[in-house]
Amino acid sequence: MSARPKYPLRGVVVSLDTPFDDAGRIDFASLERLVEWHLRCGAAGFLTPARAGEVEALTVAERIGIVRHVREQVKGRAELVAGATAEDPAETRAMAEAAVRLGCEGVLAEVPPPLRRDRAGLLEFVRTLASAGMPMLMVQDLEWGGSGIPVALIAEAFEAVPAFRCLKVEVVPAGPKYTAVLEATGGRLHVSGGWAAEQMIEALDRGVDVFMPTAMTGIYALIYRAHQSGDRETARRWFHRILPVLAFTHQHLDISIQFYKRLFRHRGLFGTVHLRKQALPYDAHHERYGEEMIRHLDEVEREAGLLV
Image 1: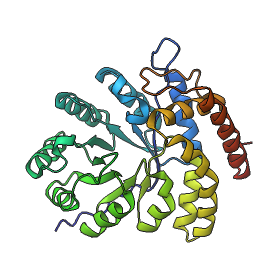
Image 2: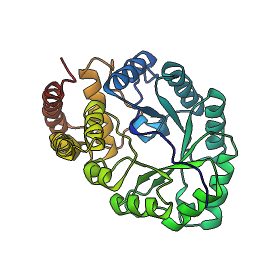
Image 3: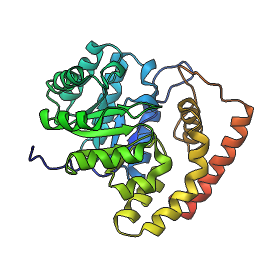
Image 4: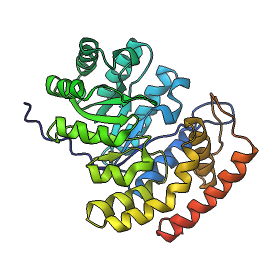
């Protein structure tokens, strides 16, 4: 059994949205404002580019450009995990190598769906990716409607590949998977929660180390700190205040991206709400209720002392 200590990152790691101007170009000025906002709100780190950042609509050069820009901005103030997931294995490798050159603390990659339950294929994927030389590899265990990678295989890969120190769990149901993974690795594998944010209190009770939202960073950080200090009731109370927003945004990833871009424009961080690729429309009913949720968040964050 490996003697590696658990990776030390704790708290809120923001999965960054990608701002675009009206012509569809990456808006780096808005990205800088967004990163500074999250840092002020208590972000311990960032993940970019990722699904929340419309990664499928970005070229490899653009992805590397975003990572370089954010790395230069946050170095010494927060950790940066570079998203390397791509359909083409060569692109995944290029992103991982670029992240290493740029000095990122970690690299995240989703296991390709055909390899989720293929022992030999998954182990080879993790070993090959880790050979890029990153200090920390975070494997994304993603299956929107299923249980993801078998726990025994996760534990085997963790023991076999030293760089594999973190797992981002996004499966259904997430809670039992958190517990099973931690038990199978003796609590040594670092576990992050992503899309299953509606179960944040349960996840904290189960020992999840990091949460990866795209917004509401100050509230998430408040909840995390309260729970870690033993004040579960305060954590639960603030969590219940943001549940209406989670219920609205978690209808679909496209709705979530479009809502949070509107929130960031409302906060003066984004110049536009432009998307490069959109599967679901954000219609008049979404607009109306979304505006109500933005006003609700303003109220909650003022109450928490996060807005003036």
